[in-house]
Length: 179
Image 1 (cartoon, helix red, strand yellow):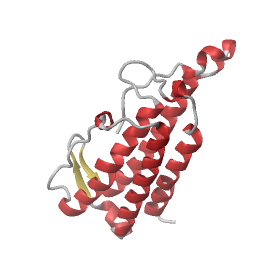
Image 2: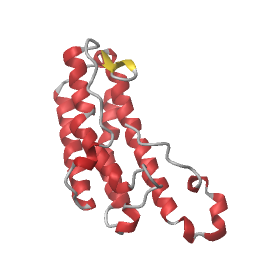
Image 3: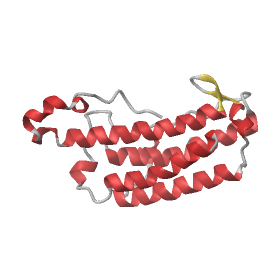
Image 4: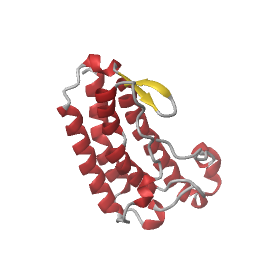
């Protein structure tokens, strides 16, 4: 399996992982966060949906159309907050549908391994490649899955008594939204 297919295979798994982790949880769990300017699990799912709509595939298409001659549009990491509120169940289904559509769009581009070296221009980071963008998409999913696990663990921290000493995850703090 080539690098592109490995990335797409992983990205296809994220909706089911989120459903397995979050579906049916009590609101106090899914809306727990780490304080001001941090994300809850609910926020993360909204952020991922916003990324499907405005980030990964649009940037891929931008690289294919413009190379490094024009930077991508900046990504609004808080863009999910402008969306109409939905239940977590609705968000999970919407994310699954958006991710499936994103992967179908990407596959329709019929990218070859050589395309992964195509240059692009990030508005803050400068020169990047299509391969780096797609690998970052995978790491972005993983980072947010880890963030959700950490926030959910912290939501139960007060209940575990002295075992807290064994869990560094309860001491870690979000360093801000990624994307």
